[in-house]
Every structure is written in C-alpha cells, then in structure tokens.
Image 1 (spheres, rainbow over the protein chains, first blue to last red):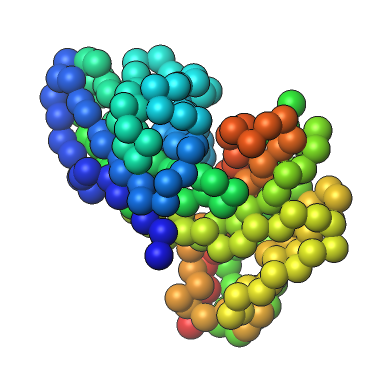
Image 2 (spheres, rainbow over the protein chains, first blue to last red; image 1 turned 180 degrees about the horizontal axis):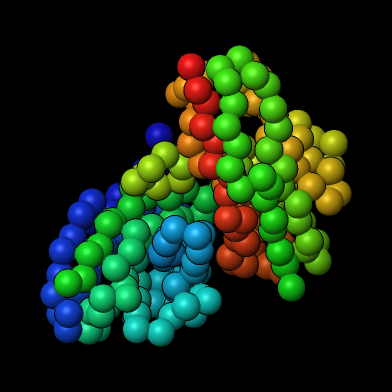
Length: 109
Length: 112
C-alpha cells in the first residue's frame, strides 16, 4: 500500500517563526511536490523536486524554500512565517500515478 | 498554456440520482488524466488514471471516461458517502517530471 506521510496534521506558529514541514514517501518515487490549498483557489504548486538535491520553483515559491537530501524525504521551509501563509499544505509523490499525503493545516498567528 | 476546467463547481444530488461531472482540458499533448476524491480536511485520494481517448475505468459507483477534449466522471445511484470534492488533473507532454495541472474541483453533495 502506497504511503505519503506528513510530520504534522495541525500546526500553530507565530509570525516570524521558521517553520519546517516534513514529507516522507515509501514508494521510491523520483518526483515529489509541495502544494498549498485555499478555498476558491484550488491546489497551487509551491516547489517540486525530481531528484535528490534538485528543486524547481512552482507557481508560488515566494516565501518558501525546500530541501531534498534523501530520495524519500522532501521538506518545505517557511523562513519567516506570515499570516498569509495560513493554509492547508499538501505533499505528493509521483512515478506515473501521483499520491498525496494527509495534509498539514498550518495556522500563523 | 495547459488548462483544466471542471464543471459544475458544485452539484447537489438526491440519493440514487445518477449524474456526471465534467473535466475539460487543453494541453499540448496528454500523457495522462487523473481523477481524485478529496474529503474535507484531508489529502486527495487517487481514483483513476486514463491515458487515451476511448478508455474507461470503473470503481464501485464511479466510472471515468476520456475523449480528446474532456473526461467525465459518471456517478451511478450515488449514496451520501459519495459526498466529497472531486478533482481532475492532467499530465501534459513535455517530460516525465512535468507537474500535473489541476482543476478547481466539483463539490458533490448527496442528500439522503
């Protein structure tokens, strides 16, 4: 059974904090993705990676960075969290079919 | 530019009332079309992949079909537990690493 896990289901952080969201997949997939999902805006791609240490900007990379040191792990970093980064964050991995993690609901106060 | 448009935005059905959701796409070349189900507060759950026009796939009360311009998700005799948002996405030609392009989804409510 395929599995993508995310480190937290719910997270509350203060403005200005550095935030790490971790994603792990057990399917040996090359491609991994980070999205955010907001009502009325759908899924928006933040960053993706097609190999270890490789990263590509998605549609909305501003305010975010990523790290992929191992094939199975893809981290999203908010260097200085802001209230407009309050959202649902979804990680996915793909090799043909794409599978999503359960999501992290991040609230920045 | 590759685009995916889903309609309707929201659909309300009585239990047992069959209907279809539409996914229209514009891509330079299609590598695959994906359907997902998403429950509130959860990540999307993979349902189907379709690769070529004329292809059909079924799972319980759901059947997905594909033409050269659109895909339909047919829901036969729906039950309240089918209530969810259904997302469509395309993988366009241009390399295996190309991100999927998602539609904004159809929010389905099935009333008992």
